[in-house]
Length: 406
Image 1: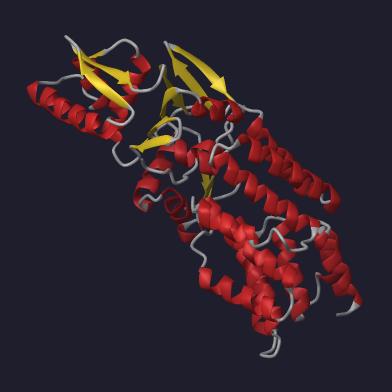
Image 2: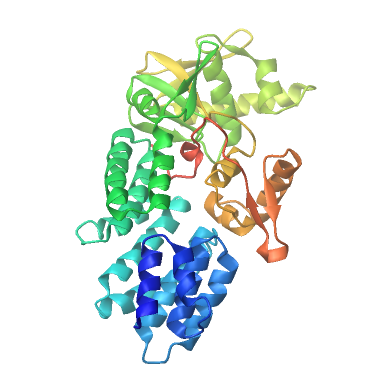
């Protein structure tokens, strides 16, 4: 490795892409191409970065498998930054194995961290945590350690574990300070805002109160029956009844929860649940069927009583009922939560992260664009979507995460 390559590599490690390009911008040898690709990625030109990294990988000879593996890991990181979540896992796993076998533990750990970040983005939190657990005992550079702690904090936030998230962010801040990279420090501070800004609203007795993440955690640990409109589930002291795939039943439960301890008339339920202003006996019959199904599902934690004019929710083993609602509600809230991370997303990546069809995501994005809440650039398969985060609100709680079903 010559002195210019070494100096450029040190500049990139310190978060100075322009300093690296000053040394290697006019060179086309494989190491310079790889470093130029990483520099362009740090500057946000992901398309150019991927081209350079692929050229570098092809230019390395057959005996330079480690160098090619490093190019693969770098390209995977660029794909993750560009929210190309469909990037093949097997390619990254093979590169990581090559690095581990060659003794390059630092880059192998970085490859494992990238895989964990991807799994966390698509809601596979247990798998992501398992990968990160293997990194806990390794001696990692400060920047990699900070990134690892940021992923752990994100997992804790999605699981509504405030203390664990705060502890991980403290460790991330310490590691970022040792790394001395301003962009990494800024990322840690941005993540810390999730713990100090409202993450949800507490609806009860006709009033709404904003809650921070730790207040949400305390609410879920109390003896209150919580109707969680962020994850479409009902929770009581660790018991969870998920209605994520039964939106009609959840809408009935939420409507009854918002009115508790009073009941809701049948006509009001039909108008809200079936979204119609004109209804007849068939709607009333369907409501009776859906209420019966909801009674069966909720039997362990709540009941539904028929009143003279409608229905009322009756909690079991709970002293009261509360609705936990998103900080700002929209039919496309989940997409806005993903776009709010500041990165540009493809429709295929959004569909993968939300477990939805790509066509339904495209329709939602078009409506968001018409409302001025999202914008796109590029054409065809290169088209990407982004949005400005909702000011004053944390949205990580709205991202997909698996819930245990009681």
